[in-house]
Length: 270
Image (cartoon, rainbow, N blue to C red; front, side, top):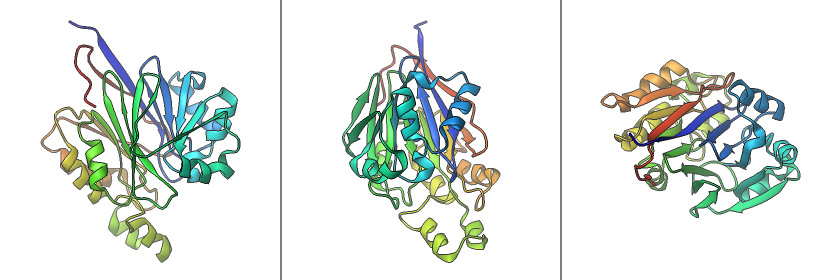
């Protein structure tokens, strides 16, 4: 049998109070977003023997505080470059402060971080220049799409052929309508620049499901306008005829690492 390569995907937290995803292939490690305190991020990393000293990059999806809070502190403390679109990095500047190294990227233009090839793509959200990402290595392709009000044709095109997806399932429309948010905030959440509902996530996943898709992680669930069991049930309808495993990330604790493996001889699905 050929040797097997692996890619580890760990959602350290996901929700309106903080978001952070760790991806590691054994030689290259990155964070997607760093949206709560440096102390808490490093504490959660230590739970799974993940070292911040091994990080090659912090990559920011957009400038909202629940995605960038610790980016500057981590960058300076551990000498980590921070990547983001020019709009994102400029808008986040007052939250991050000085960075160890700033790396401007452009939506639609892939870039490499050591062994990873990363494709940023534009998403619809109320931020300066927000992006989703696909991260490809020699063994797998991971897609990340949270904080988007609508799944555009562009989003779908980038997320096709992934082996794992981190996908937003933010709210149940009925719970949002009946919930405690003021009317203006409810309208923002439901807008094309807001967040995907459970049903919208289900419909998107129905188009993305494929035999290579082994894991889906539902992310950015609202603590007031959704329930994990509701999100699982509704979004899971898209996976009824598949062997794909469905997980739900939450705010209070990290999700255990998911390991993606395949034979080394298998070509990359980019």
